[in-house]
Image 1 (cartoon, rainbow, N blue to C red):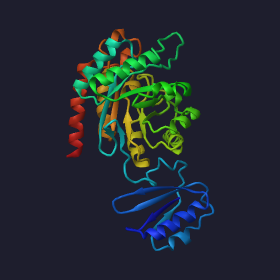
Image 2: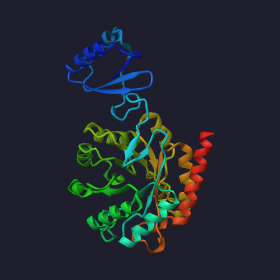
Image 3: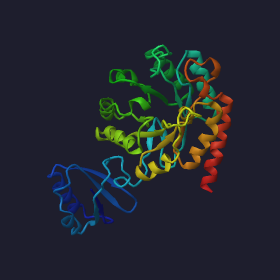
Image 4: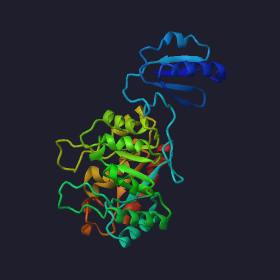
Length: 334
């Protein structure tokens, strides 16, 4: 349920209203817009008398919300959320490019790529150290050593770093990681999401490859209900009957999510397509669809990459993509 207040509500009446609502064991989330303030009521609202609240002088309207997600719902929070990542802002008109290798392979490799993507226009550095692989015999990542290399490379080029966590037990290792990524396979690892909700560190939450948009939002709700509002949603393709691409990039999810939630929405065209030549056109389509950023895999030697080489762009290709993305965004503003 949401309570929409009139402009400039009387402070004493507002205090009495909130005290009464809290007495019914309801959580109140306040969202202040330019002209209106919205109270989002979370909990069992069946006992709330809507007509009684509507009769108050400070109340404009009262509405029940059927959506099961409350914290992530745009109806509760009309203005876009802006997530601040060590000074790099995403959401609310702030567009960011996240780039780097699928996995950190060596200090020389991650440092070289970090410099290249920074020069090309990236604003955040990605790199996996704990790798969820389909085969137990595939490269599993350098683990804590890889994280240290990623952090050092980020500091060297002055970019925040993004890396994927696999398990709650790894949380302490991510203390110096700027954005914790939750991969598609862990989107519904609810115990992990609950623990991430107890932190204030930004979380990049990827959509599961067989998950609906509402399920993605409910996973975000797990994090936010724990007290962490810094969630970034990522569309990375879903599994369909089509085999021409690794996954099917659901670009319709971008405007759907933008309408349903106030959280930033980014797109991963690398995992969606699985083929480097398809990444630039789908990335540009994602920008045109209105996403808040892209996360792209970039490698200085894709044929010899230890993980996902076929979908990784060369640094020069990424630089060209960054320029074209800027042009698409400029066209949208016009």
